[in-house]
Length: 217
Image 1 (cartoon, rainbow, N blue to C red):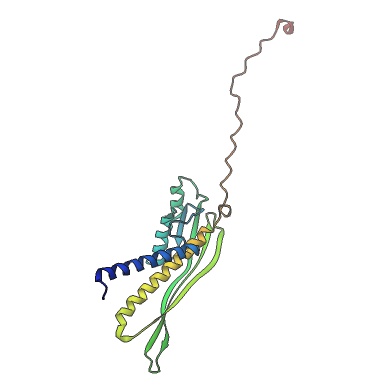
Image 2 (cartoon, one colour; image 1 turned 120 degrees about the vertical axis):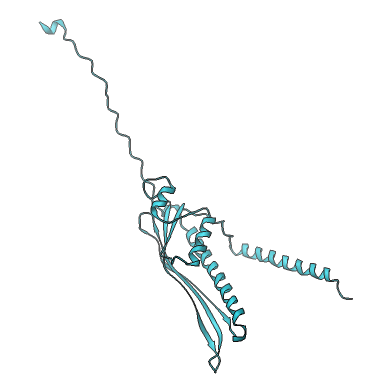
């Protein structure tokens, strides 16, 4: 006897729910942490070197804000955020040395028709302390993924390509967060020693000494 449509849909929903739950357990077991659970040793960060319209910079800034870090546009803004006359020690500068993405043909037919594409994203960066010294030397995070292509499904493949690049971008952002979370407080500059208070000066007026009669003789 055929199963009732309602019971089939319930079983399908339950199977999907269980697969999502098991997937979450697997991610937790391999050390995956949801965005916002990263503890950062710094309080403010400046993102430089990115193009004004960089989608990677936009997502990275949003992810950093979710961790409790304040993203500032300049070292002056970092000082103002800390109510300090100088750049605070809990400030770092994330400098993008390269932020590129492209799609290249990976395979063709004997007649020159495209059958495979490769999506690539690469971020090269370094991190500086508030005093300008290098905290994290120049590093690369690169990703590449293949997808099939057919002229008949060009529009659908375009959507697939955009979704793939978005997923790769999110993966790069998570990798950056993990590297920034690995920074220890001891790696940041130490706060300046408070200046010792100058010794107090005795401003009391000395009592005049009256000569005794014996000394006047």
